[in-house]
Length: 432
Image (cartoon, rainbow, N blue to C red):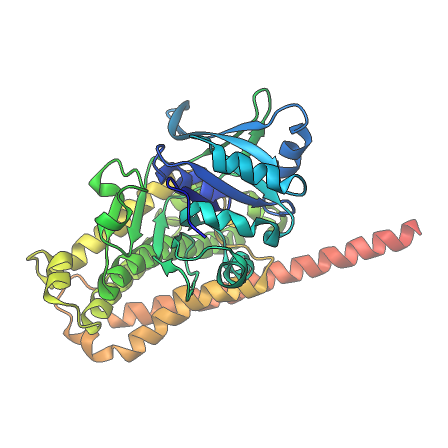
């Protein structure tokens, strides 16, 4: 079976990350096929869109920024022909095969109805989490009519394997705090994004240059080796996601201190909480500084233990001393704090308390793993040359403090949920 001369690009996942970053990066010259499952608990707009398809079958995707209370269009602007795959599959395939420049949004119920799509796609991006990949990995390996695609997974912490396709991991960095918005007349899906873009991609530029439309060198880090990709990916993980987690944990602690009712915790805006946490009244600025320093030191020591090549070492250090690299990483962390203050985000999005397994998973990534690292690297930490590195005693104290805070916050949340459940049960019994 031969692929068409002008292949489409396949994208899976039309949520915050897909709309907010991934699709914006795809060159407007590349025609798209986007797959969206009909039943999706995370996409509230889908039901509204399906209700309008009898009268309109073209939807516009766009994202925008809000600066100084002014809405400004950003970089994503794409028109899609919307097709439901439950019927007329052969007609839809023929339309896609014969289209000169159109892009398509295919809404499906059974993924096996789309086995033919792979014939028309040479590349694929995906912004889906582990549960989504559990559906797509078997499809790519066993059901898709064509293999040999280059696949770029964009979600954090997703491990994708394939024996028939080439996997190139991408670490995305853009905060998409708002849900996708739906409007009609004309049909439009839009999302508010921050005015910041960065991806780390595990491939040299010549591999992806025709696919991704990168506006400036600051938006992408091409890191083809394991050591280099891990360094820049972990930089984002430790000093963006990790900082988010620390601020949310201290934020919940402060809400507990000032006796804000648990039912109101999820309504707190992150920028306001950050200001309080980092103020003298919050008394957590020192702890945040220590954690930034600890993660910066960890990045350098982990990179060095990976035994990078001379080229990779020069790429990271660029003739600078260990201390200078440490200070630049600390500055990167502080710049991210400034980013967080500009975004109307909520504590509940950063750290949900209603899913205990996910809550524990985050504590393991950002506190337990850091604690283990510090224990295993006791010698290298003592020899670390940066004069401004955090004191060992401060590190131990902050990690213990964070662990206690996690337990107290979640216990209070659980206690409240349990009491609310009892009240609802009693009220229900009275009505009966």
